[in-house]
Length: 219
Length: 191
Image 1 (cartoon, one colour):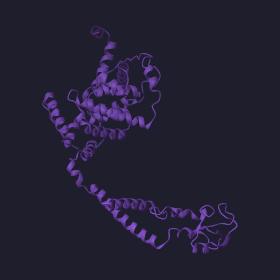
Image 2 (cartoon, chains in turn orange, purple):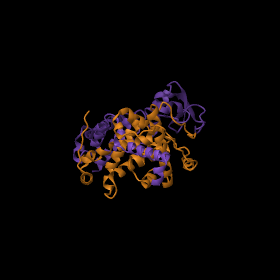
Image 3 (spheres, rainbow over the protein chains, first blue to last red):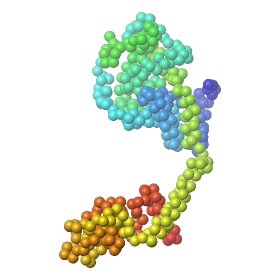
Image 4 (cartoon, rainbow over the protein chains, first blue to last red):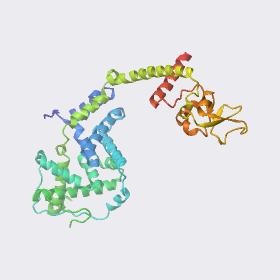
């Protein structure tokens, strides 16, 4: 199963090439659209999965988001980043599908709980950094994905949009319909919790036991 | 802040831990796509992205005009067979089919309707003649739609005004085909 690898010399070149592709698709060369979005397949899927948590739903929504982007390609303005635009469409589609499939419970209450208490991160005596090369191993990737999935929805979504999809704080707030302050609080909390999960797992055998139960404080 | 991080190992460990998290999750290698994802996506995009001209030359595209033709032809045929039947029989000829032929009914002089005796819709109750349903039908009387209602449910449409296409015996598809065909015929007729 060989992947087609596109070798790019430098960022400016790839950005220019992308601008060119976008322009051609906008002028009607729709068959080039796949080549345009290929670099973003992973990110689009990850965004959908973070919101829907189900692999086949996420793939479905990822495809639909791409189709929607193609249908609206002429609305894309070169001032913003194409990846951001694509991810925003994906998030929208995913949220819409989730809204259709179940009622949203107590969304308002969640905002208040952000300010409730400070989260104290744990101390780890034998904490070691996980190198990026570890990502080559499938079980490491799976553990990272599990840790992310175990987070509460509101933390998981903010973290994915900000730290995985590289949206800025403002874009994240808009995409999720929450305040900038909520984004910042939840982001910090998410990062701390993930740090805890990863650090405890790395030292003691991955996730044989979650370091904290939901709702209770970890100290 | 940098000073503090230099001096305080606890905070430094938190900071480094978070940086580690951000670096790992920001790396696209972290994301595993389901097997075949790109193939399926490419296929779905290709269906939508097919250049407009070629979209009309698929077998699916031909289904619509072929189906339309079939409907029209079928409709015209049905229309023809239906009108010839109607010319041979009177409009109400179907109506008596379900009425038991030996049922005792009455007709009032001067009307063309036969009733069950005692029906409240009989005019001129004095001048009633008794006969069997079969005889009444033969003489050209029509059943009262109120007291003989239960026998008439399947043929209610026979009481529709002349010129309509509705016939309750025919199923829905043929019915709509005929009304479509009639409409088409009408349009062509006007041309």
